[in-house]
Length: 565
Image (cartoon, rainbow, N blue to C red; front, side):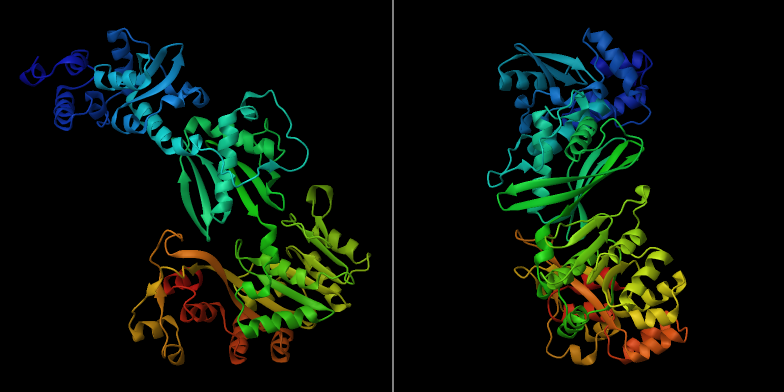
C-alpha cells in the first residue's frame, strides 16, 4: 500500500483495498469531504469512474446493513410526516419507511452518524440505516424537497372543488390513484394553482431522471414543481381517470375532458391529451375558461378601426370571416366573441369544431369525428339542410371543406372559420393553393383577421425604457409615433410574472376591398396583396405590435418576440 493510501481510513481505505476505487480518486474525495465537512461517499460519487452500485453493495455487506434499490420505492409509502426541511437540506439521508417505533433511513455512508442522530432526535423513534446508492439518494432528496410543499399543502379553502358529471369510476387498479389521497390532493392542487395563476396549459412530463410539471402563463412555459419521478405513473393515471380515459392503454395517444366546479356559479373545463414518450406518457391539459368567451370585443385589444371592420363584417347577412394565426394565438376567443355578438333568439347558429372548446348556450355545437365519418365537410353539408343563418367551421383543412364554406358564404350565410397562416395576405394565397377558384374567393371572403397574443406589461411595476431614437426608427417606428411618447420595459413585482400580467391581442384586420379582389381574380400572390393592403393603410402585425408599444401596453422586447422575423 503506498503512502497516499495509508493516510486514508475507514470506508475510503477499504474501497481502495478491494480495488473498487483508485488511490488517487479516494484521496481526492477524502480530502474534499474533510475540507467541506461532507460524507466521503458524497464526494466520491463526483468522480464519474466510480461504480455506485458496486460501492453500495460492498458497504452493505461490510457493515451488515440491508441494501435497498430506491428505484423500487413506492413514493406513497414515504413517511412524509418525518420529513424536515432543515434535515433534508443539510443531511444526506432520507426517511423511507416506518414500522412500529422504527424509522428506516436511506443513507449511502453509514459512518454519517450525525444524520442518524438528528433524525432519531427529531422523530423520537429508533432509527435504522438502509444502504442505498449515492446518486439515487441525491435524486430522491431533490425530488422530496421539490415536491414536499405541493404534496403537503391542503386545497385552498376558497375553492369548492367538485368533479362535474356522475361520480368518478372506482377502480381496483393500484395505478389509478383514485383512493390515494395524496395523489388526489396533489392533482387537484395543480389544477387549481394553474387556474389561479391564469395558465392556459398544464404540461405533465416524465423524463429518464426527472418528472416535471410546467404551466404556460401569458404564452410562456415555466416550471412549477418537480414531483418524485416514481409518482409519474400514478399521477398520470389519476388524470386519465378524471378524464375518463382508458388507464390500461399506454401505447397510443388519448383525448379526454375534465370539468372542475370551483364554485356554485363557475366551472372550468380542461381538454386533456396524453401521448406516449420514451419514459412514460406526457399529459397536456388545455384550460378552457368559458368566461374568456364573454369578454366582449373591447377587451380583445382591437384598434378602433379594426374593431369597426370586424363589427361591420359580423353585421352582414352573408360572406366569410377568416381568423388566422398559429396555435395559441387567440383565434378561438376571437371567433367565440363574434358568435356571442350574433347569438340572439332570432338567429340559427351552428358550429363544427375539433373539439368544441367552450360550451355556448343557444348555439348548436358539433364535435367532428373523423373515425365515424363526421368531418368538417360532412358537418357543413348537414348544417346547410338545417336552415342556418350563421355557420362556424373550426378550421378549413382541405378543398372540400373550403369549397362548401365558400358556397355557403355566397348563398346567403355568414361563415366564420380559421386557417393556419402567418398573415392576412397569405390566407388568400393558401385558399388558391388549396384549389378554390380565385373568383369564388374574391366574392365570398369579406374579412381576414391575422392575430397574435403578446404579454401585457404590468401596469404596477413597468418602467420607462430609454432607447435611442435611431434604434427605434430601425425597429419600424414612424417619426410621428415617437413625438412625446414614453416606451416602457418589464421589471417584475409580486403582482405579476416577470413584469408581465395578462395578454393583449395584436391584429391585422384586412377587408377584401375592390382592389384586393381584382388582384385575387388576376392570380396575384401574397406579396402583391400585402402591397395593396399597405396602400390602403391596413397595419400589418408588426405595425400593430409597435402601436401597442407606443401606447405603453407592451414592451419592445415582447413585440420583437411575437412579431419580428
